[in-house]
Image (tube, rainbow, N blue to C red; front, side, top):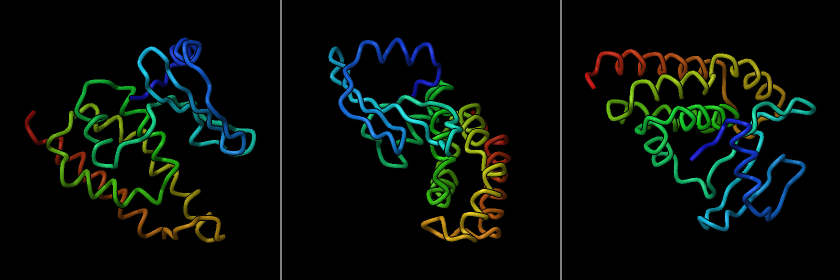
Length: 166
């Protein structure tokens, strides 16, 4: 689902045909003629001159629960890392993500779940989310208390998953 290695991205992009691009949002859409798959190349954490990591993933994106199942059940670290990076830039999804993880954490690969939560980066992103919500830049207000509660819930999920056999 995700390709995060730059060399693999370049190799795959060279096989595909570019369909359209959005320079303001740093997105490019591709079609792979051999597999007939659509792909999206983008920088989810782009801010001004700092683009952050580039991701390449299948398009369209499945719903939240399906994404978690695909990326956290298979032993493919790039999927967990890519999904974590992409969703770290979307704090409005965090409550739904944590709720879905709380319901299904026992079904996910322990290593994949740990990688996903590490790259979801709620601790590091917290300050930016709070400052944006105070200045009205965020579409959905997320208070510091709510972010702290979500971070606490992720720690609880990690501990529960650590003690679940499998």
